[in-house]
Amino acid sequence: MLPQLSWRFVPVWRRNFLVWKKLALPSMLGNLADPMFYMLGLGFGIGALLPSVGGVPYIQFLAAGTVCYSTMNSATFEALYSAFSRMHVQKTWLAIINAPLTVDDVVLGEWLWAASKSLLSGLAILVVMAALGLVKSALVLWLVPLVALSGLAFAGMGLVVTAVSPSYDFFMYYFTLVVSPMMLLSGVFYPVEQLPAWLQTVSAVLPLTHAIHLARPLVNGTVPAGIATSVAVLAAYALVSFVVAVRLTRRRLLS
Image (tube, rainbow, N blue to C red; front, side, top):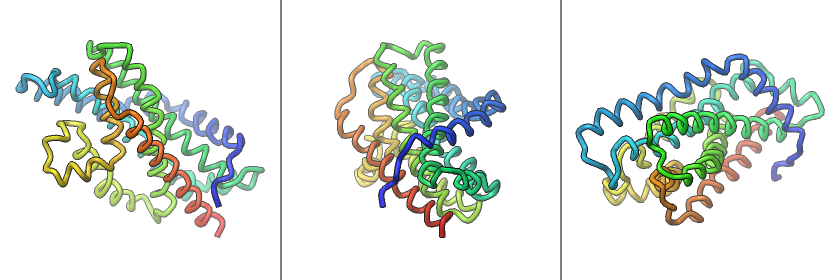
């Protein structure tokens, strides 16, 4: 059965927001530190050794990948560790569904919350890019809906893993087999065209590849090619993973 959606997800989203607000500053600093070190360390370090990549300075090339990488990281950690704590450890989800809310409402609220948190991380990186003079055009504002859509895709994937995970340790399989390869194969640090043909084929089906495919031209002040295809891929990942997460969570909590 498909998810039954209603506005009852709003209290779930709001509950997570109110909890996060108490620790907003350390949470944002934690989400920003890793991508910021990558962008500044590699951007200025390796960038000093390279004349340009794709016709732009390396730090500008890296900036687009960093926005998408930060979005993936933030949505993934929220949908895995935080959501798993609420579902399995704290039993928050079980308490919520004793109110006039369903599992579908809870998963929808968690999905949108994880995407919202990833949007904050993406916007923070965008502010840093502007401060470094890496924003070349108003087209960069299209990164906002792109980050939101990407956040939904990665949050949905994370919730699928959460729904089947027996413990926190299980998440290491997801990071090792999915997140890390996606970071390395999707064009965050170098053009995908540098990969062997068979790895390019693998890269072409990864959501992070399509997010970066759209983000990099926008950062450089140009309109991306193949917008419809990349948006469709990201939307498909978001919707399919959400539906699967709802079904698996129903099975886990209601069985």
